[in-house]
Length: 160
Image (tube, rainbow, N blue to C red; front, side, top):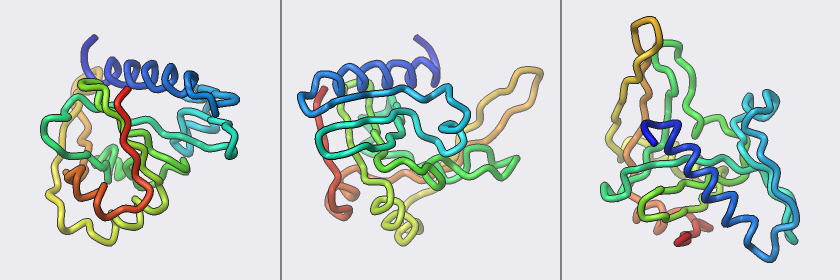
């Protein structure tokens, strides 16, 4: 498994298996390839005993940094907002594939807190090569996991 798509596939597979194992899960639908849901950045639809939720999955390899990477621009060159800024999901499932640690972040609360506090966190960017030459730049902020847990109500952590 290499690169970001391998991480994303692993994250989706692990989270799907975990959600399906929960007794309260009634139905789980993967909508990653549905254009209507791609447009609003939603990966899974979960129906459980409490209701129906739209979930966005973010897979990450870099747990040892102790940070989340909240994407503010997915493509700086095209001025495309980052998924964290526009997803219509109810929850962001932020998953570190090693050591299989999952954080469930309530999107409205987390995004409001993040935009209010954005200047506290260092900006970082990463470039991704594009077929046929060139690249695009993804920009985001490094946000300490502990800070999010302490300051955003409703964040949950699970070991899968």
